[in-house]
Amino acid sequence: MTTKLYFLAIFFSALGLSACQTITQIKDPANTYTPEVTYQKLIGEYSFISIPDYTLPPSVKEIKNISYVRYGNRVLQLDLYLPANKRDQSRPALIFVHGGGWGGGYRTNFTPFAIAMAERGYVAATISYRLSGEAQYPAAIYDAKAAVRWLRTHAEKYAVNPHQIALAGGSAGGQIASLTGVTSGIAKFDPQAQTSAVSSDVQAIINIDGLSDFTSEAARLHEDDPRKKPSAAGAWFGGRYAEKAELWHEASPIFYVNKKTPPILFLISAQERFSVGHREMIEKMKPLGIPYQVTKISNTPHSFWLFDPWLQPSVDAVVTFLDKQFKVVRSDSGP
Image (cartoon, rainbow, N blue to C red; front, side, top):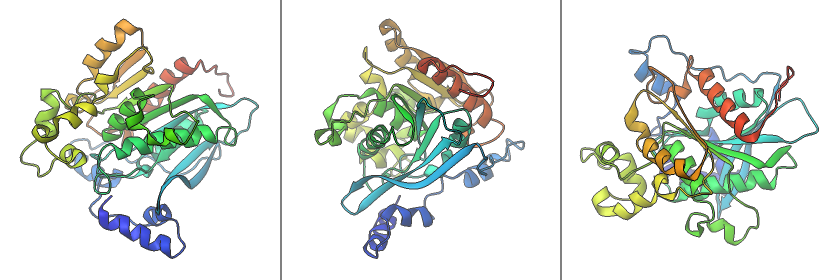
């Protein structure tokens, strides 16, 4: 989100409208990371792809524009997708963080994925967060932790199991989800913890084609390209690697692996540069016995999860992984 759009939100807030409601209605022309724009870039090489249907099935209930955190006049919102059928037991939940190079994208990019997860018995949320044009690193991490804390706070209302919350993201959102999940208990990443007794810990991480190590040569070759002024990562960190090496290191999930690290699914495309560092991170996880899974969707571009025919196998991989971690028992009528 650009600074201009941010101040538009504040302006409408002064008129009595929610800041994030305003942002929901206004699309920033500079923010082009949407399925529609990406489709036009990919259709030449992948002529068989299509944008998934956003139609809500009768089996899923949608609650849109829920405010989950406020910073002064700035309000961030999420959309919630729940199985329509009620049951006595609470359900596991999954929060989605959209991609877009830390400076673009919309939470609606993950709407079809969230609907599909709700159809499989999960409560799913898609969140908006502060983009680099509004607030640089680590603001997005604060926001993701706030979303987890909000969902856990309201677990009873939405029949969520507070001990079974996963965080997922695609591309930049995958890196954000991963870093959020592996930095449990580290105060510098969670200022809200000073005023809340509710935990922002997650019990599983889904990193969909997101970086695990900004400091690796392969990552810096792309993310620190001097021809980009600035690069997406450079804009988020406020400087190139040579200028902000400490931040590039600090934002790399690979450096936080410890015995309390949650289980991680690395769901990756055929474009390996986007998931740089996941193999090395796994090697750190193995001796500690941390569960992990790598699922590669073959012959795919980056952003594969935004399109059919790849959405369903992506959903299947996530459901299989989370069912195992959360010990979900399924019957013919569902979980």
